Length: 203
Image (cartoon, rainbow, N blue to C red; front, side, top):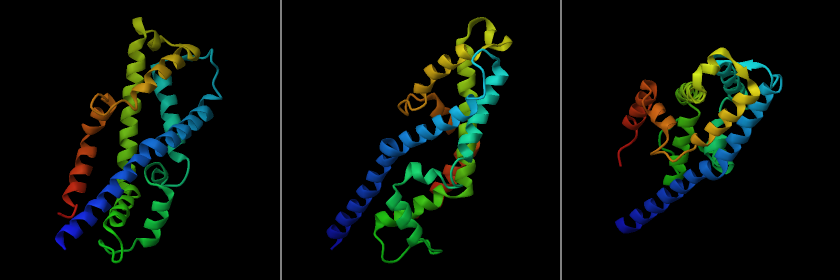
């Protein structure tokens, strides 16, 4: 019996881990598309010949981020991280009980994952992390301009290509990704995951 139960548990765990691929295969392209839409909305009112300095670049990047964050529902992160059928099932299955009856382990894991993703704490952590990424991205772009030209200002047409060259660094492999390293070092992020893991039920 124990071997059968262990096999079922492993199968449920594999189903849950398989759903994690949704972010890279489907969620990330959707997120990029939504970010591009927010960027076009903010940039369309600006002249390519207009002078941009460090402050203007940072303010524009923050406007893009705020536009992106305001798009969709308050829980729009769900569509990037969980399949639609999982979201619907988790919503209909959720209750006030920490452990649901009549559901598989993988379904229970999905319900718990959804609860984390829609929490106010997670939303706050995402916002803090994205702002840290914006700050770092702007500093990296500024460093590409020799002689401090971005301090005095330069045409937006010259700034945009430099920003575009930095973008491939954002989804870089985790062990090499400097943005992930920065996010991991944020005290609020460290505390969030410490509390999250501390509250996880033991196996």
